[in-house]
Length: 153
Image 1 (cartoon, rainbow, N blue to C red):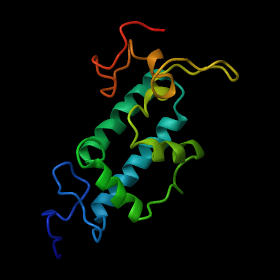
Image 2: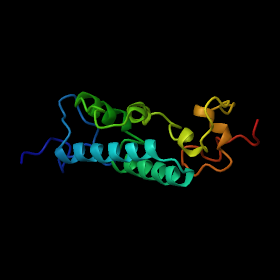
Image 3: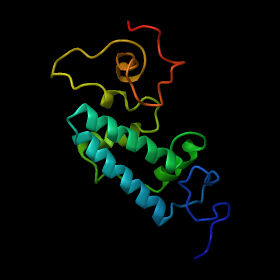
Image 4: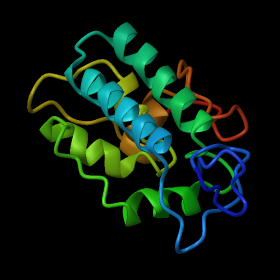
């Protein structure tokens, strides 16, 4: 197997891999990792219980970190995924939107909140998807104590 310059293992979706260049292509291992991520997304979209959703959000965040799709260099790795034309055809309808939003901070907030009845008002306040409503208990690393408001609105 011929190695790509700058990626000793041939895998670009690793937190310690260099930023992929324009000609970089994901390895089969990289594509398998995206498939694993999509399977987790489908499970999250179909989960009804808050505890199950919380565990899946934690798994997805861990997977994003292990694939270098969160943190430093993540934008370049997401561009690699986009250039590879990874489709969402295996994703449930709500999963396609979520897959596109994974690169945004705070994507997980709506999945950590208890389900609201149809037609109910959404939480108000700052942050993505009513983030202030979950800051008091959110287990996610995206809402660090320094960014949480001192009290709820």
